[in-house]
Image 1 (cartoon, one colour):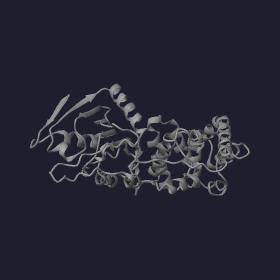
Image 2 (cartoon, rainbow, N blue to C red):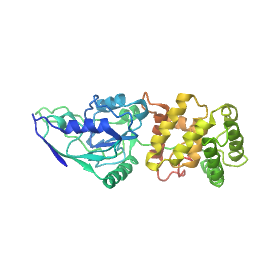
Image 3 (cartoon, rainbow, N blue to C red):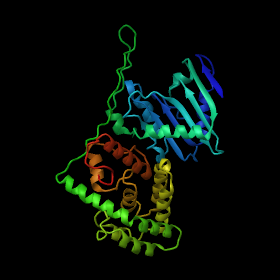
Image 4 (cartoon, rainbow, N blue to C red):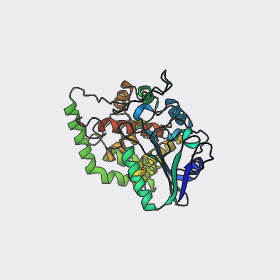
Length: 369
């Protein structure tokens, strides 16, 4: 364990630890009570499997320009991994946890937020330490709890966020920031006419899917392992997942557009998602969607998103017109330049937040939404 003490005018080692974390990590989690500046010279390891940068909003101290700098700095596939603790007040941690390719786990924890002052002019005290796998798992679970109460930072969130006025008063003192208690984003879910009837129908469809799920998943695994070809997959899945079976959620279109898809490639992606740990699933979904996008797989959107929604109804939405119209109506979209996979994860996180902040809403999960 090393103690990193800093005083003005002293060359500190804290910035070196941050550079090392971003350079070496295959898993990297950064939490900061606020963000006032961003070092765009940091290089995120291209092999990093899991990354979360979470900042707070309390007192309006986090600066919009710093957030925009992060969004511009992030790779296209990582733009949904920059989160703000929008539904948490009193968010005040300052820590970095990471795991290297060699399996070693580290942490930096202490008084420093992500600001230039923390690395140069402030009086700060931090600790850098190698930690055990068990300790890293404890940190992971803590990060998971926080991330579940966050929303992705995008221009939509920044448009609603109010910075504290940091101009000096006539007597030379800075304005006193007021605490931010409420969430910046308030999701208002639609209540169309006949909602109860629609929900009842959707619940029946999800129940019907649960009965056929073992057979459907077996077809995916058979295709992924090349025990059946794409044409056989198409025929079998059409019998197991259909309006007659009562477990299909979307309307027509897939019969024509999906038939020519490479289902072996798609099945490999879906099985990878099925086998992922819950903590890793968003990252795997993003990665696989981007891979299918790169190959031009025509079944990656409506079909795959329905398969994800049916199997994980609390986590993933269908990519359909009602969902996109809802987000358009409330003026929400993914960060500019996000990859297709990152856009889908951004959508999933925002819809999860919408249900979480509307506990009395009749729909219990995204599959019923």
